Each structure stands twice: as C-alpha cells, then as structure tokens.
Image (cartoon, rainbow, N blue to C red; front, side, top):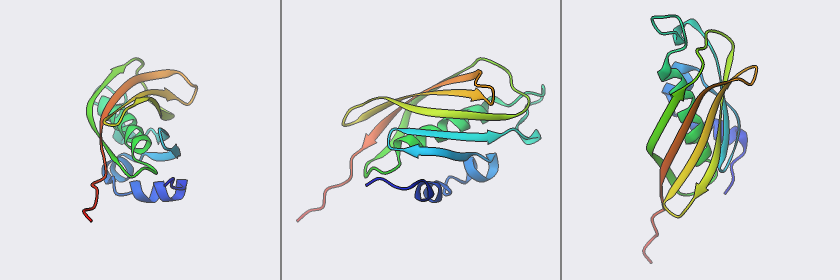
Length: 139
C-alpha cells in the first residue's frame, strides 16, 4: 500500500531526533525515493564553525529511512552506511535525495547525494539495508 506524503510525514514524526532535534523536513517521498531538507541553524555547527558531520549523516540517513520504509509492508533497517564529506557548509539549505539502486528480497541499496541550495554536492552517502519481510499469520 502506498502512503500519501501527509501520511508519510505523520508516520516519520516518530523519528524525533531527525524531525524535532535536528529539524529535518520531508520534501518528497514514495517507495524507493525520498528527498529531505534542512535549514542550517547555529545549533548545527561544530567547533570550527561548519555544519557538523553528524548533521549531514542524519539528513542523509533520514532520507534513506523514509525512502526504504514508506508504503511497503516490509521494514528495512540499515546494515551498512558510509559518507564522504566533500564541501564544508556554513549557511543555507541542505537536501538529501535517496535513490534506490537495487533491491532484492532481503537487501536494498541506496545512493544519497547531499547538496546545498545551489545544487553543489556537499556529501555523498551510501546506505544498504536489510529488508525484513512481514510475518505470515498462521492459519
């Protein structure tokens, strides 16, 4: 069953770290795809005055979670993630766009570029998840 964007946003409000603490918003979502956004604020800076790497990771990881868990009955949990930080950021809006690369019965792989509001690549995230199939009811 595919969920509406409003239903997806409501469902993922439960990820309070991403949505409340960090301030990430869902821009678009459908099975196998999600785009998230973050307005950079002073709370996102590290000690040297640029956006902290964990913030970029959380932005991309949240896009990964939304893309792999919206509108499907199975649940996907991350088993491997890595990120490369490519450009320091100090202001503006950041976007993470999770794009499904491949999916089997038990594994899903996503490419997630993180860009700034000018479309410049800030970080590159790769995520692989284990797809947990729904439990079958005994009859």
